Length: 86
Image (cartoon, rainbow, N blue to C red; front, side, top):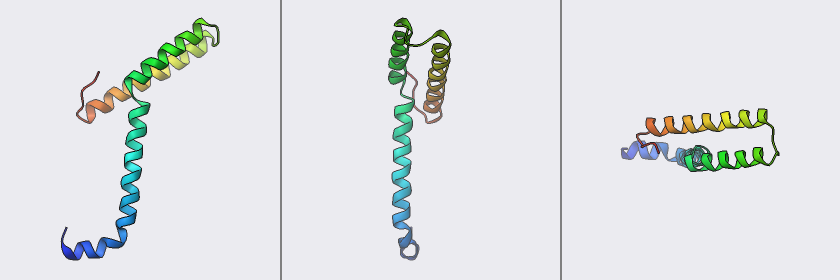
């Protein structure tokens, strides 16, 4: 970035900072939401709820499908970002 460009875009610095922070927050939220270990723990907890009779078969199946979809999306995101899966 040249000196003139830097001076002319200086008033946008706070906006760029907020955008940068927003992007980091989104990345962290996605990392937590699609974390494979967390999804596996959620599946285990879900199975316990079913075994204790806290949820029925239909609810169990729906929530398992949601978790498996999250797992699949998370793995796909990792591959797209050049990371390894697993």
